[in-house]
Length: 189
Image 1 (tube, one colour):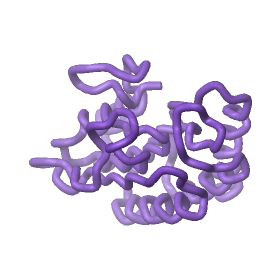
Image 2 (spheres, one colour; image 1 turned 45 degrees about the horizontal axis):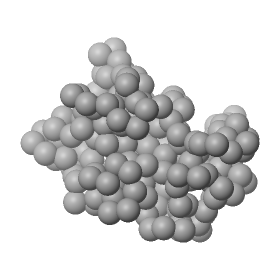
Image 3 (cartoon, helix red, strand yellow; image 1 turned 180 degrees about the vertical axis):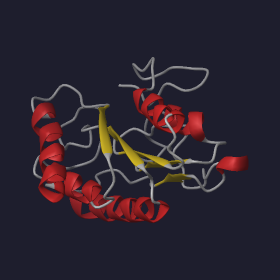
Image 4 (cartoon, helix red, strand yellow; image 1 turned 90 degrees about the vertical axis):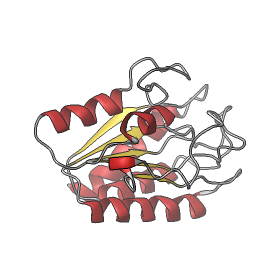
């Protein structure tokens, strides 16, 4: 995982922020607009920190609420970016026991906003710890829901890179990650 690694600190087992590195590489290679969508249960505080005061990279996260979830200090809806980055940051904190019915509404809205932003590249911080049996989260997604997650992400309609983030101590990690990819491919093939 990498999304808790920021400019000047690390956390949550993250030392290098792979999604941010990929987004920056796209910018370095000439992209004008890049988006990072974090679907992990935990807020990507490191990714937010890296791009918070910069234009050109839109960061969107839909974590568990910061009042009760690690990292417990970021991920609020009021965190919209600052300076040149004002409006480029968007958080959708979701309540305890969020099911697919509620989750997919937030994800679809996030992807619609990303589509409107028209990124040239989309980087997904793919955490599958939103699964109902994950021991360190409190969302209630089933394995089949990850197919829908991939389908909704595909609606953005741009070249997309998936970077693995979280998922802990459950046999379904691989099933859930593959389901996201299958759902994505079913809408892009």
